Amino acid sequence: MGRSRHCSEDERFLIKKLIKEGKTYKEVQKIIGCSAKMISNALKWEQKTEKRGRKRKTTPRMDRRIAKLAKTQPMMGSKRIKQDLQLTVSTVTIRRRLTEVNLPARSPRKAPLLRKRHVQKRLQFAKEHIDWPEKKWHNILWTDESKIVLFGSKGHRQYVRRPANTEFKPQYSLKTIKHGGASIMIWGCFSYYGVGPIHRIQGIMDQFQYIRILEEVMLPYAEEEMPLRWTFQQDNDPKHTSKRAKAWFQMNKIQLMEWPAQSPDLNPIENLWADIKSAVHEAKPRNAEELWNTVQLSWAAIPVERCQKLVDSMHHRCVAVIGNRGFATKY
Image 1 (tube, rainbow, N blue to C red):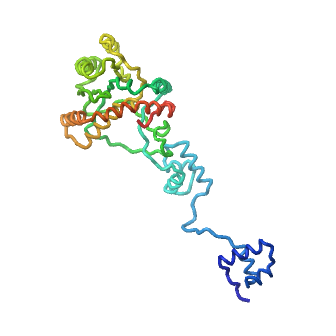
Image 2 (image 1 turned 45 degrees about the horizontal axis):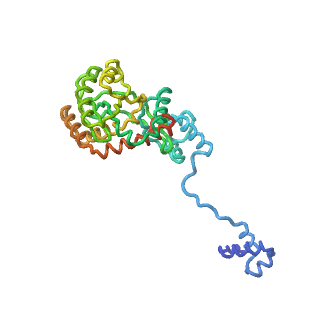
Image 3 (image 1 turned 45 degrees about the vertical axis):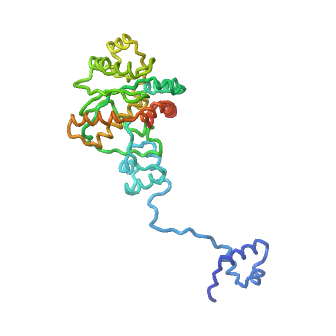
């Protein structure tokens, strides 16, 4: 007896339809002109998914264990995951499984180390200022110091496994402490109306030199360029909050903005420092004097529109701080 003929797709459809309507095998055989075996095969036929490539090395349970460990310890590398879970697969396979669940290796963002008191103060500031009108922000004189590096430092790159858009969550960021080595240190200020003077700090910046900068650099500019009623912003560096500095502000009747510690993301001048450092990177100065000249030129070239956009972002910065429960934000 020969092999039964295979059904076409149309024949299979018709056979299933007739059987569903209550026809017997013999009635279907007469209508289509096929064998009983062909009818049986048509009823049993199922579309098989095409499989290519080698067999998967990990089981679904192993995949879940890998993903769970990477989520609980996002800084752990694939080699350590393999050791801790005692897996026999390669580190390449582990990285591939993590990528499948949207946990590829990424470089962690650097963010200030925030204690509980810092987080609370940041939240308090954001909630108190989230409804400030834009014009009120226009009366702030933003100030800060920054160290500009002549040559970038070399170091070991570390990766973190995290979902998308979570780079500023505390468990996914590298913590930094303020002030590292650099070639020159500068002080600058700006407002909604444009950049103010920039000053190169000689030697060690202490409370005495800071007061001289306020007296000789900042105050003449503010009296000439700022509105009649303006507010001075500074961070909580010890030289800024020293008794001498506080007495100077009181003597000159300058209103100070209360500022939360460890909050560079709330100060828009940090974005201008990033612009300066980018310009330095492009210019590639060869020594400290060329570096200072590059800084001065790039600072003076910052357009007023850039300053206005940064100041107008303060509402969004407050929203971001509240949204991230007081931790660092993308700003």
